[in-house]
Image (cartoon, rainbow, N blue to C red; front, side, top):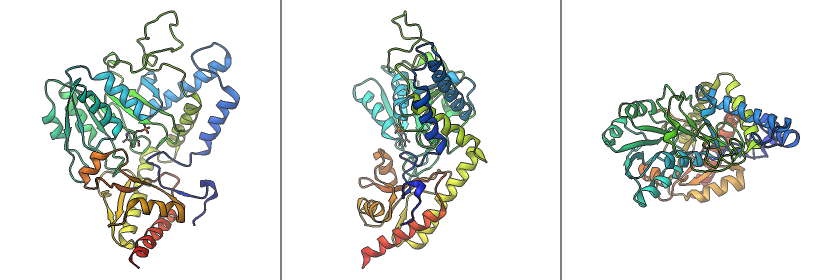
Length: 397
Ligand SMILES: Cc1ncc(COP(=O)(O)O)c(C=O)c1O
């Protein structure tokens, strides 16, 4: 086994689910908050509460910078990308509205939309991607009607890593007065995103994947000029502001941030977000590094692993995610051997995206998935390729 003490003795390729390891500064920041600050931000007026509030504000600023957003108050913290997507989808869509989405979406988009369609609140058009997961913006243009309120699309696929032409789709939305909601769970910290340039109205991000924050972090970001009153809150409750009123505050971020924030998590998220933004080469450099790992793995596996089938197209705009199989070999068995015998962590199955697997032809079994991080090395990939080679050859004997 390729032992790396810092990584708990494992090779971790499950970064598309959540990243591991986290940079040391993330751990330090969480420990610092828990042991030295601890207080609830925006509630009391004592110095510990003020310090906690400063951490939250700095995190907002760092996330705003990441998305080239001018007003940090338009960054709303949630417990994950799912909560952000539910807030945006359920907050924007009302009785009689029409929405457009695609078959490449994660269940965090599909399920709330499906539920709203089933209960008769909205009508829904599902755009089909091509066999390699890419959406044709013109299909979206054709699906838009006078009743269309929102288009909801993911930026980068959690199944195969392909990157959608969001700028073009956003332009179509702008031309038609439709709200453009983008799921950036997989692309944040991996693909440069400019909320204005990319014509995004609302985006959802995960804090625990490409930003290297702790689990339980994420958020919804509202474009600078967007009228946030078009979004109804999902949650109502205490915000620490206007405690004399029983109405929910109508300003940002309080309109959407009821209840005590995950300040320990946000402390780590701040450290993670600063860490990647200060990294040499910035997000462009991260994308280059990670896609090189993706290409390298695909190339080596195609060369050495018998019956290797790859579903990710590394020649197209893509993240670090690779979906693959060994022909006719049950994926759960492979994942088990990788974990138990070789200490390689990956994910197998449908990755909460059954429709995407139907599109690429891998439903109902799904695929194995590797997702690389900035901490992975080529030698880990070499080791994994050798492991897969042995597994594939072992079956043939
Ligand atoms: C594309 C996509 N959207 C949404 C989510 C949900 O993210 P979270 O687990 O932070 O709710 C994921 C998680 O894997 C994802 O890959």
